[in-house]
Amino acid sequence: MLEITPHIHISESDYTLAAKRASGPGGQHVNKVSTAVELRFDARACDAISNEMLIRLRKAAGRRMTADGVIVLTADEHRSQIDNKRAVTKRLVELLKAAAKKPRFRVATKPTKASKERRIVAKKSTGDKKKMRGRLKLVD
Image (cartoon, rainbow, N blue to C red; front, side):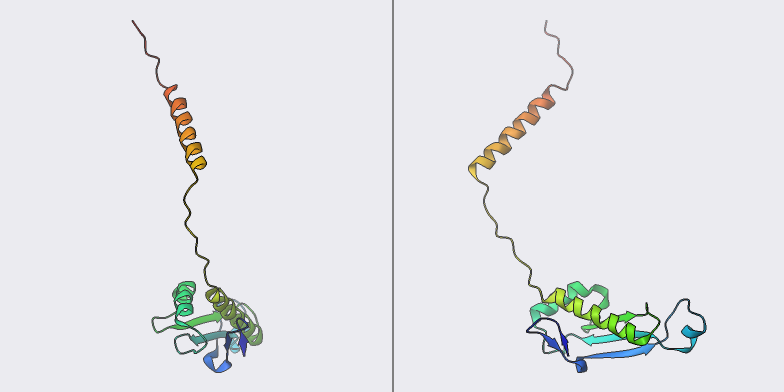
């Protein structure tokens, strides 16, 4: 059982872990042992995820989520399969935690009369400064 928030829990049957061969350097160890881990999590089928959270999750996951709503994460940075399993499940939890947070909406407020006046005074002083920059006009 993965705890995302105190109210959201993901069971181990909701995601699948598969071991595969890692790429990159490592010599004989990399060629013999399947240490890389691929995690597949079907977000649409999971009951713990609401529609609002699914929308935020789609945005947070980006290209890691397929059109069918399946999140695919891989880890091959460690030499052991167990460490890669820990790393990929930790990434899934962090992704789901980010999607579980509801964004705070900004309440629009009107500017005060004093702030409008300060803005106008600043604009006038800038305009006066720029007027002084040009060529001097000769008066006959």
